Length: 392
Ligand code: PHB
Image (cartoon, rainbow, N blue to C red; front, side, top):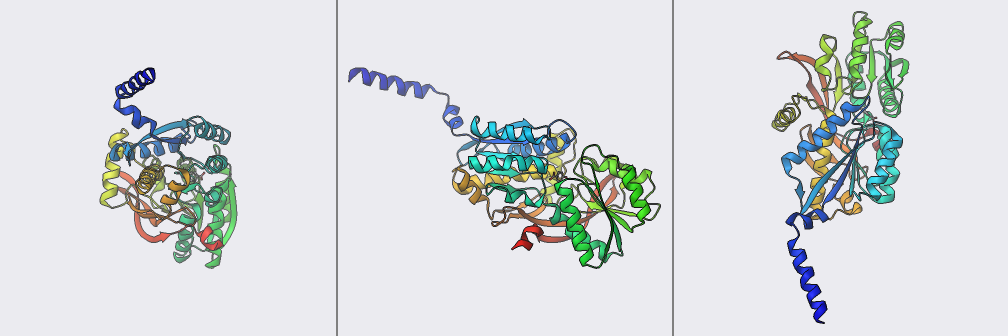
């Protein structure tokens, strides 16, 4: 009896001697952030990470009694690495949330692990429609290619563009963009004269742009992933397509805010559709751009940064809603139907598809105060992913 009591007293005093943070740390919600931090798509990783970190800096690292711990891992945009890292984060680090996913194949590689581990997986960057169907634990804070492409195809037909060549990166989001553009444009009475697919890695656009020239369309519609747009823009200019009377219209991935300023005059007048522009005129966005640039040595945020920022908002708001319950099903259920005012405008999570519903903006590249911006001139509100809407 006596010995047991002494032991108990010792244990209690040991517990009291623990630093205050230790009890909380045991309770921390770990978020495994998997991104391409090196390699050809490092700009995506850098932007998403900076967006997520800014959200935490502004909102504190504690939610509903839990400390939020971000664990960043570099998958170098290699799907086998993404799968391995996701596995390790779930089984060894015991993360309660997986997040990031810079490209579609990377998100696809991690999806089975989210299902097996019952871990919510926040897709902050990748944009192929089908991704959210790969696990009931996936919620998306970025966008889908069909969501931003369909409005552009309608705009083109309404603006005297009759013949189009499509030119897309030859992988899942490119094929999504190609199909969304072609289907919508031809349905509206337009004609697709050629569909060109370019390799994803280090594309040399010159031979493909020559084919575009020969086909003599009114415009070329393009999607290439964030980070690749300036190469396309430069070669479009070098080959004199604009002088030949061919317009470039694209998803906003091509005139990515991270690179736009360095694209120079060749980019002026390019019409794009997308869900975020650093030039978006709202008090929330003005504050966001200012804080982001201040925290990142003047780097301008692009849509990837906003995917990271809003992805963290999703995690924080869901945790508040569950009162700190971080179990997979509870968190995903809490994310369904959430809505908030993002720096991009009003957004919500479609409770049926777990995709983001958002405004799609029409923008033109313009020079303002000596810098290039995607200046919004029109919009379509509350756009869902059209591929899933059509399946219902
Ligand atoms: C994707 O791989 O899903 C992806 C990557 C970059 C983008 C858009 C989509 O800009």
